[in-house]
Length: 322
Figure 1 (tube, rainbow, N blue to C red):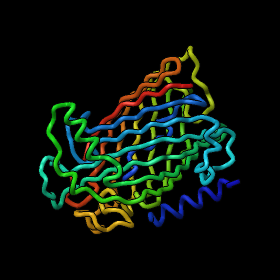
Figure 2: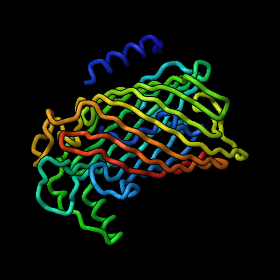
Figure 3: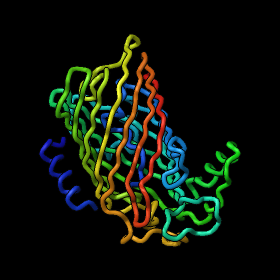
Figure 4: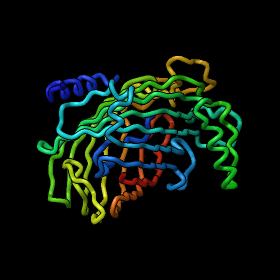
């Protein structure tokens, strides 16, 4: 078992050395689902912000259930001996493009085309007495042509009768994804079921993304606290909003710099041009009726590379308690 002192020490060490590519973080408090078993679909697209560039689309399907505790990859997930634990698996697909995806030529100084497809195994541990949460996740998969980014975006644009993307042959080439992440959250303030304020720290390392960060979350409205064990029932109705802001120290991003193993990509961003400090903000609305969760949100991220701009996207989420 891991002591709280060990967890804090490990987080501080990783944050200090700071050895964004996994775009969807499904374990933080504002993503809490008040059910022991649930299925969730999370869809993000910059179409919601009337743009079509950079992080252009993300899809995440996940399942949380007690039997996932015995999933083979779950054995490498560390977590403290808190009184309540959830286990989950998910599939995530992310796509990235430059500001103009219609040209077949490389746009030097712009973001490269990139796509990621991976399986995410995760655990969320909750201590309702001391109001703290700890999560860890392992992502395993592929980036590059094997992730199918070209086929997905081309198919969607054809279906919508939109501009055909022609630059995908210049995408970052195939490489392996193996990433590990740990996160810790501590509630600082609460007012019954109407207000919650917490802070969080995270660290991530692997072949896809190396970064660490700190942030804060404010939840307000009428909700079940993510720091207590309250199961939503068929009589529950909840509606609330949340605000999450974080600052990340970025050490490496394969969707910009290319993979660690395959150096044949036609175009990548030089490590010296990666922005070391990146700010991200997310604001969303959530409605819960019986065992159904609906969410709409908007996210903003500051420039991730020299010459790049800030980027805004939105998304929707639907979850079903099982």
